[in-house]
Image (tube, rainbow, N blue to C red; front, side, top):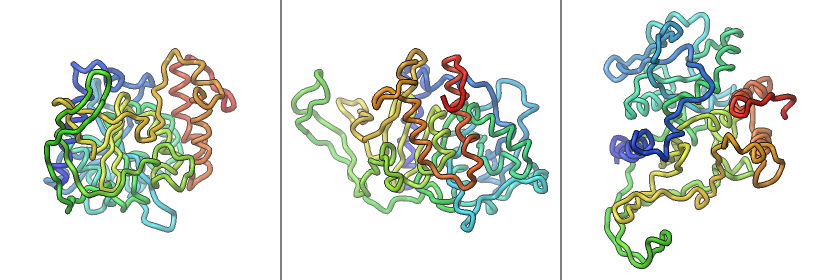
Length: 342
């Protein structure tokens, strides 16, 4: 099964999420309350034809500005493969063109995914921030809440340890079986007894059920051990997690995965969050007690701080900047003043 066929699931998730008629996903369509837009984006619309992408300056663009996707990825260890970076000396060169062949595999895969979801612009940190310009880095780091919060879709290279690991776009060599069966099943009080299902079965590795909720960092995939990523996941409206032989969808209202292809009485049945051990909450603006209370069930702030404290950093100096977007977002929601981690 090639990636175009596999992406029919993504098309279905997106259509359900962005539909004007689906009020249950209204939070997914709202831009972040933190205003802002990336200073630079990669223009990728001609990548397949010319074999090049272009770094474009967005500061002179007028509203409404176009949608864009963001990439969440592991850079890799300092002594391993490292991503291509924009620096002062190659900024003008990147604004002219960046050959696709010079990009690492994860970046090339993110470009392909962006095109598959019909977007023309992509934000990648190493290319859209001038890495050796301190003022530019600080300015863009302060925009992270807006960059990820206003992104159309965040592409997460979840299983990749570095920039060459890719997003798992390789075609499956596995056989997919389609069938209809009757199975005694109770979905809720409305549906009882035997019902007909359209199901798809494929031989696959087990879904990594612990990679969202496990407290042991070794049980998580590479991306979910990195410090910057917690903020990126927390702020994004929609995330497509690219896991080994699996695509996992997360938005403000739904959590689903590629293997979950159940049609119940003609309607798609998403798996409940609790059934996959996924602990994720949309912060209610009125839930002040739930945000701040230091209890196991309600202390969302303290849970976030605890999770963040376990994250790894290549550069320890990034620890506060990589959390600033979460602080900025929550301060704006609650009209609150953050002070010393409180």
